Length: 132
Ligand code: C2G
Image 1 (tube, rainbow, N blue to C red):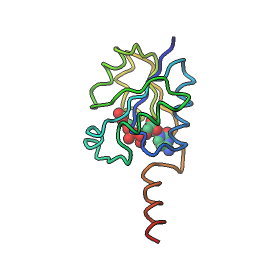
Image 2 (cartoon, helix red, strand yellow; image 1 turned 60 degrees about the vertical axis):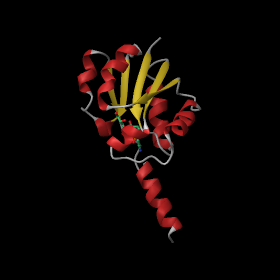
Image 3 (spheres, helix red, strand yellow; image 1 turned 120 degrees about the vertical axis):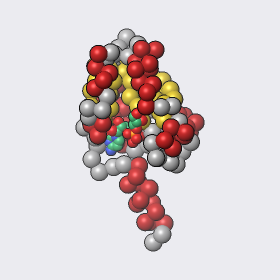
Image 4 (cartoon, rainbow, N blue to C red; image 1 turned 120 degrees about the horizontal axis):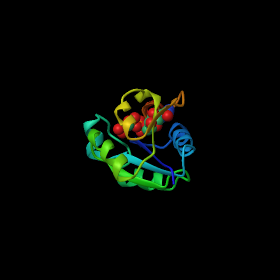
């Protein structure tokens, strides 16, 4: 069984997230998604709208996702790849190069981001609409 892993906050799920999850799954048979805990998001300077538990429940309902695990820190990826016997690590290409250190453990693939959509943009648009 070929296992894939990807990481992210996955807040306010949108088609950009769905696209990368669908394309990541195409590289194997089993997709593990590590989602940032609320505490780690604070470290990333991000505040998710949905809590970790809500984001986890939403991801587990997506057909491409087989397992959801917590992402507590930047350092856990080496351990995760070992522990989950991962064959392929996939991230959006805004991270291109940042995780090449995993190349001696597994295949590292960066996929093009979906243009024109992001959680930040959604929040901005909603604020503008609500505030007239
Ligand atoms: N993404 C995408 N297209 C978009 C928006 C996001 O392909 N329009 C991808 C990102 O490249 C990333 C994944 O969706 O691979 C999750 O994006 P975020 O939830 O914004 O995650 P991020 O803040 O990049 O956290 O250790 C890695 C971090 O946890 C990644």
